[in-house]
Length: 167
Figure 1: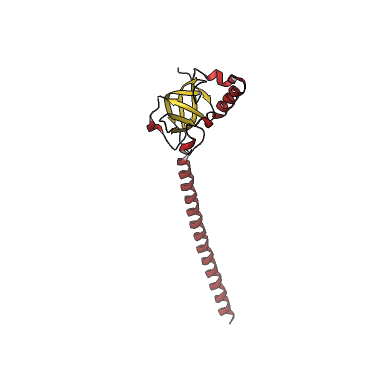
Figure 2: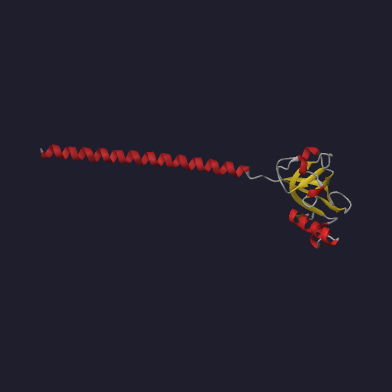
């Protein structure tokens, strides 16, 4: 039985590194994850220098990827191919390391990538169901109009027939 990796969020990372900058030590939550297999969800980018970076933010401009100003919001990645860059968020699994002297003090040694469904399939299912319901409503409405016309025609014929009898 394999153990599930610890889930680390970018909120955990930001809080842990902010604590480090203020007091020289990582937060307890982040310290517990160092050296262990973790899962982090984010967007993969390739920095100008070729290093791979994981960020919580989608659609980053190239100037924001890998910069030291973003060190609290990005994780350096090793053992990840540039082919893994995607516009979709990925769950990366690997061992989390801490190096206070690195531009990005948190480094994830990636061992696996999990692609999550973005939910776009559900959008198509809901859209198809909506179109089906609209088609049914149109057919029902048309059916009811035919019934109404038929009743109106019968009523008109009866009224005209009654008037003819009275004359």
